[in-house]
Length: 110
Image 1 (tube, rainbow, N blue to C red):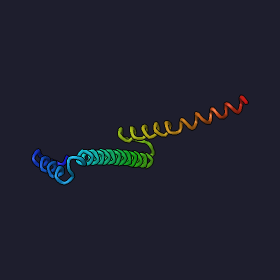
Image 2 (cartoon, helix red, strand yellow):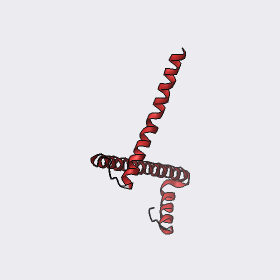
Image 3 (cartoon, rainbow, N blue to C red):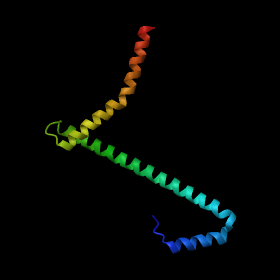
Image 4 (cartoon, rainbow, N blue to C red):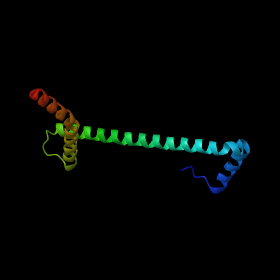
């Protein structure tokens, strides 16, 4: 990740031992390790969100393209995008529809 060789790591370890001392060095190492983990998690989260936003943007553009073509003579990629967008919309609304059905059923029973 940082392209640090063995000797560079040894120099950093000796400097840390001299500057911090043997009592505080393990705590400092743990703290730096936790920071690095948090930074990696944050960067992975950002990458995932960016990829998802790009995918949504691409689906949106494909849907606009399909509307322009009047849903006729669609390419396979556009058809797949439209189908996946429809499926995602159905999955997103399904819990709300189920809860509405349950509420109306409870009102009819009560």
